[in-house]
Image: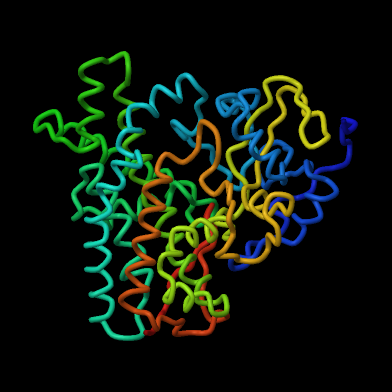
Length: 403
């Protein structure tokens, strides 16, 4: 049994460095080895602990002694000045479970598999359009952005004609400094107002889509769901259901095209796509920094440190996914990795409800590109590509490709 200690050293500024492409800060490797629970100070909010090892990150995300709801009314550690009502993300069971159960059926593995053929048709249509536009073309504009939006539109029952509007509004959900606080607040208000309008329409004209099902649940048993919860849950699903996927699709393709011979191997062995997606999810540090601190409800020993009741702890998923004790040769993209318990979709009660949907979309997009454009390559050197800034996630503003 290791000796539990309490640290009195001053907090390190965090994030440790500005995100650079999809690189992970080398400082994490040393922290996992020597100081797995480190005191950090984000640009805003109170100091926090940062968990860097896989086992500790799983504990923070899954152990009921760590609470999201306890952040309410606290100066939560964060990378942005504003504090929004984050809805279901800020809840603990059983309240969190009550809301999650109402939409979970739409994201089961079976339901997602039912969506796969339609997603394949859509991906093929979009890649056809990209090819027709001529080489080089921007994969972000032609494929990565419209596909997740169309899929979540179909699932929720949102008119596709409105996709440009809500894609703009959704940036407020993942913005740290890319939008001025008043603009971000305005976008969120517009998104909520839009969803309230759709919900009102469902009461006049009931539908079988997910929003229609949520409205029926609300109207048939008001104790299960308040009107405000319906609006926030629908808006959150719409934004979260496409924003990270829009960003991650180009990341996956970028890594495959910049890692020597990996793309060609998948062209030759397309059956590897599902396991390749899992390894890419592990390998790519999508988050620009850790977010959504959990507060200790009691004294907890974590990483050899005594975390006091009331102290916030952040979980670094990118660091956990590079933990050498769990993933041998962790800094190498290994398509033959047999066990891959990555935490790209989180863990515990807040494990991403759309994980199966995102996996399916990633697989379909890669399968379609490998089949239709086997000679795919970057149209510009990696150094010439531009990356998004001021967001919770890392991603390319454009991905010019040739074939």
